[in-house]
Image (cartoon, rainbow, N blue to C red):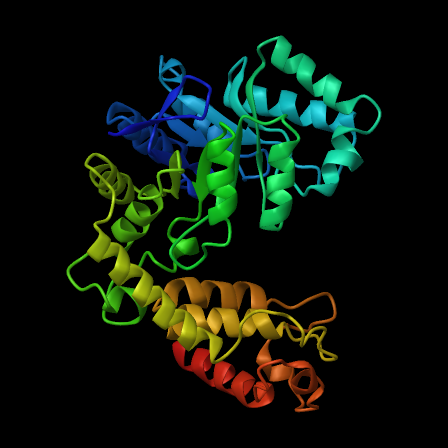
Length: 369
């Protein structure tokens, strides 16, 4: 396993991080793959208060002396309760679930937006209350995770509070590349989520991204792409099976950096696929809201996941379990609700024939059932 310095902390962490959101259902199976990962050099584990049973499973897996071999990262969400009392309660709950007396890298706001610096951290005495836990050693290093705009992520970094950050970065989404470089320059550890783009780059076969790299593991290419960025500390992988753990450990136990030729080929393939997906939708959301409640960008995104990137299982799961999920009025956000009113077409910068393409989406997924 190769290790990298976590910013200015003086700590070396494994270049492969274990994303704990997709643990197996079984506590015993989770223990087996977690301990295998640790025995083979993985020492960074990322979970969250809001991941179902994840902290509990990790806490059980780290018994018998394994806790002292790893660094735990978890996150505190403000979604339902943005009070310091609620924040403290969630921290204590995480400590109990994880069966530990400290958290090594604590994302003090899960999915932080810059506005929360003023609205929560500087409100009353909240930040000072949080810093007391650091003084006591309960929190060893303060970090944040974010999906905010890249320019706002830089503003969060500039507050000077944080020692590390967690953002998304992969072959298909390089929006945070400048922010990643900025964080590294400022001495922060940089943790990457979604290196395989939520599974889009984690498929094999003759279609989509995988079809352009026959004979190569596309998850391997995706992780190597992320770790080829010298400003990245850890690439997290949400591993739910022993097979995935072994494959990723093999990838990160040798020099992961892509050659210039490999990098050129990967970026060329990504650009080509992006151009294909943009024929359906760029995701600008100018078409929204739809008067019939259709999630137009969501439908086109999930279509691209399957038709363009080849990730049929990911696409089907999202389409049938989210897009087609009925609300309390029995309605879905699916393409069958389109009446061809054309309101969306008037607002689309690409002048797409959205009703026609929604019909194609419906036909496509009807055939994938």
